[in-house]
Length: 396
Image: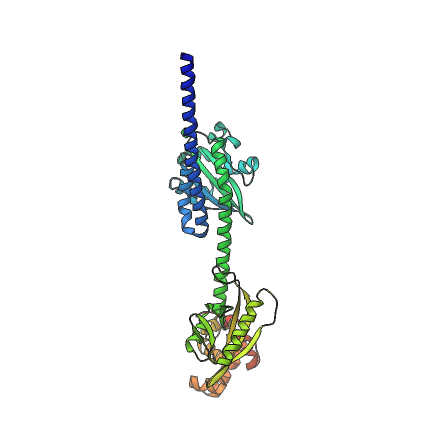
């Protein structure tokens, strides 16, 4: 009878243990799902990486976490818990070279896999390392679970989840759970890198267009203006040949607007295919016409149509202003730079002399000096050198 009661009690306790394990596993799994959500949010919101390390530590019932990216010998802390943050500069400067975990994880566990301390080093051996004695010991870190994984060309991610020695090693169930998380972390970091590259490309594209001495507009097939550089904005504000309504580009004259719209639609249709550019002129009252070139353009900016057109507009009456740049390029005096600028803007010697209240003979003498400094022999050659220089794209 007593034996039967003992068996019943043992079964009851075993049942409770199973139930307790199920509930614990359920909570861990729910925390893992929340962690995966956070890591994908961080991929598109740089500010969320700060909160990731504490959440990783909490999910895996650990005291600290470090997430680093490494390119060659340079490592960068992407997200670390507060208790190891102050020690990270020392790690990045020196102790990464002594990190036996990372070194052996690559050799004994493999790239893209989760391992733990017990897979790579004994407690006794680790306790005798310089890495433990001079760095880990002061962070109360002894056991680790994590991995080294690829995040991009020539770039690695290093995930370390840590515990104190008194807490105990990571078991197979914990490493299995971390193994489910690692692919999501790897994918999120790759997305982050791709978005960063796209952002750089966009900044470079915008800066290039802004520095261009030509008005430039990126437009969708229906004429919706995605981007206009500063020269384009000036032309739209002037309204003598181009204008915008509800964010769309229009020509002032009806016939020219029809032609411009047709060129934009055709360019958008041919985006990604090599084709001839569309060319037209836009007339203005009392001024020389604007020359327009419409070319296919494949959009890579998030939230915009894939196909569009880039519209370049040149204004023959627009003056170049680059006094400081001309001085720096050709070692010109302020007066010489102003004369060189006037030449590049199409002014005659008589007009330059009148503007500077100088005689024609004085301006001609100064021109000879400008020719010598620019390595040219005549006026047309000097103008060509100036217009082909960086003076046309410099900001002043």
